[in-house]
Image (cartoon, rainbow, N blue to C red; front, side):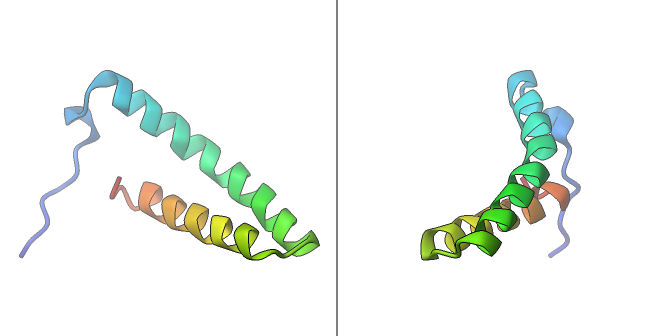
Length: 64
């Protein structure tokens, strides 16, 4: 099954803007979370880091 191309311009304007800002903010948040995990590695911090890295992957592969 061939995947059709993702076209963000088919989304409503408010959702496109929200996606654009989230895409720009996710990397600094991931960096901050990596620093937190390196200083005090708790289970919740690691889970949050994994979730943020997964979201980052989805944003930059244009899946979301």
